[in-house]
Length: 329
Image 1 (cartoon, helix red, strand yellow):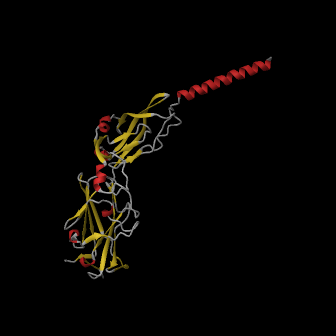
Image 2 (cartoon, rainbow, N blue to C red):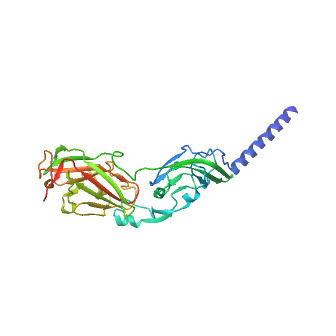
Image 3 (cartoon, rainbow, N blue to C red):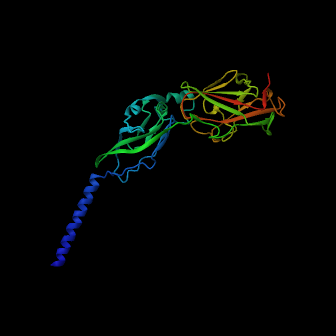
């Protein structure tokens, strides 16, 4: 009889456990210990940025995330800073790189939307930032989150922080490479004339619009070579990963008597590398250049510089040889 009582009690406890487990599973779970592994999140101002998601600590998915308040370093609520919207270029349709190859095709797939500079993705809690963050003061900001799932809703006061960090609008020297000067024999480019001295590079962001890169090549005296007259031409393209140039990254460009001007539809530009990093090569045709130990007409000069733009706008790139002279045609 006693054994039967024990069996009965054990059965009742087992049923209670099963019912409780089923009830918990049905109701879901929303952890009080949701957290960001990176805290504060480092956000480069003006660049497109997406953080990793928060750690849900076992919370039942799906959940919906929204910001309750933003706070500055003094602890004041600054929601108005992050509710203002700014124009941002986004894709309106899928881009097929095998089909959408021209500047017109790419720009036809773009549209302008007014978006807040910093926001959080509702499905994951990832922080998203865009070029509009250039309009925000730098510094560290904290934020409250509201998370809702099948288990209910929780407010997480000052769950995380992010720091808006001033950075460059582009990557160039020394972040992604260096400038160089080299020579190839006119008529037999398999013969190398070696390297010249390291060219100087100056990159300036001139304006917010239009999206263009103006490249000017000048000699040691500051005299520009003339792309319009054929003095500056693309380096021979022998297939990736060799000697790519802006003419292969955009089909919309033109030449003046001092510069080459390239239009680009969106940032980052170039969007992807052709296989040799983000180095850009151009050639000074042999009859228009003389350098230390290099007679005019015998050696083509190749100039290389690295550049990748992250913030839209107009840029001027000046590459100056320190040992070559432009020869008048």
